[in-house]
Structure formats: C-alpha cells, structure tokens
Amino acid sequence: MKVLMINGSPNQNGCTYTALNEIEKTLNEENIETEIIQIGNSPIRDCIGCGGCGKNGGLCVFKDDIVNQIIEKARNSDGFVFGTPVYYAHPSGRILSLLDRVFYAGKADFAYKPAAAVASARRAGTTASVDVLNKYFTINNMPVVSSNYWNMVHGNRPEEVRKDFEGLQIMRNLGKNMAWMLKCIEAGKAAGITPPENESKIWTNFIR
Image 1: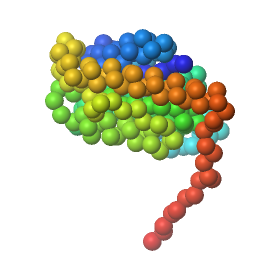
Image 2: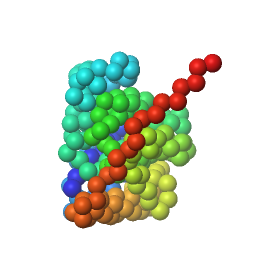
Image 3: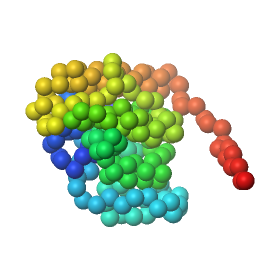
C-alpha cells in the first residue's frame, strides 16, 4: 500500500513539509509506503475547461508542468495527503491550480481512495484552507481522513512547527488513521467487497 503526499508549498523543506514528514514517519511505521512530491516553484497553469483530457486518456493536454506526473502516480497509489501553506486565509494558488486539473482530468484515479488535507500557518486561516481542499475529495467519492483535531500545524519556520507539539501529535494520529483506513479497505477487498457503483450523473440545470 502506498500514500502519495503532495507538498503545495514552493518551499521544499519548509513548514508544510515538516507536517507531511511527521505523517510520513507514522505511515512508514505502519508499513505503508510513502512518497512526497514537491510541486516546487515552477509555473503551474490553471485549468481552462477545454475538456481535452476526456479525449487524452485521463491526462491533461498540457504537458509543461507536474500535473500529469501526479495523475500517473495516483494510478498506483492507495491514499493521498495534500498539504498547503496558508496564504491570505486560503490554500496556495499553486495547489489549487494543480488540484483543479488533476481532479478534472484524472478523477477516476482518485475515486474511492482515502485522502487528507493538511494546512500550515503562522497563526490563522487553517480551517478555511482545509475546508477548501476537502471539497475536492467529497465531490469525487473519496473517504476523508481526519485526526483528533483539525489537520493543521502552526509556525512561521520549521523549527517553530517542531515546537507545536499538539500539531505534530495531530499529524501522527492522522497517519495512524490513514493506515487504519487503508488496511480496512484492503481487508474489504480481500473479502470481496468492492466500491459501489454510482448512478449515472444527473444534471439539474435551471435556465431563467
């Protein structure tokens, strides 16, 4: 079993990474394989709603950034953690552009796999940021992994995050809950339990 972890910060080893790394250590202790992907500081274009991904095998038609790499890795992953710093009380624009495209193009590779959102902030804006990221999961049939408090850490630098003992505990409990959910899903598959089949999509459009 493998969990793919996305660091939505341009800072490779900053506060968001520190939170993800705490989860990673716990998952590894539970014999869950992990990989942290840094989206880095190269440009990530926004989705333009062209629909070309529907004719492109579930991959985005634009190939000049990290989006298709993440979709391809998602196909062989069993769970996900998406981490973001807080900018003006919302997630980074970079991770939102990324998620708009990976979920629009590659939604089938994420469906029915558990996911968690993690936010890092100096002080505030964390709950709003987690709420935004959770919406990607809940529109795509994905179980949401929680902890014993909202999934957040506080600090302006990694050394400050490492002093947020409650935040780090939340990350460890999140890792344990993710491992437990993955093992439950694996046991269900072994017992012949498969994901439910959704009804065909109904579009309710009101034209006034």
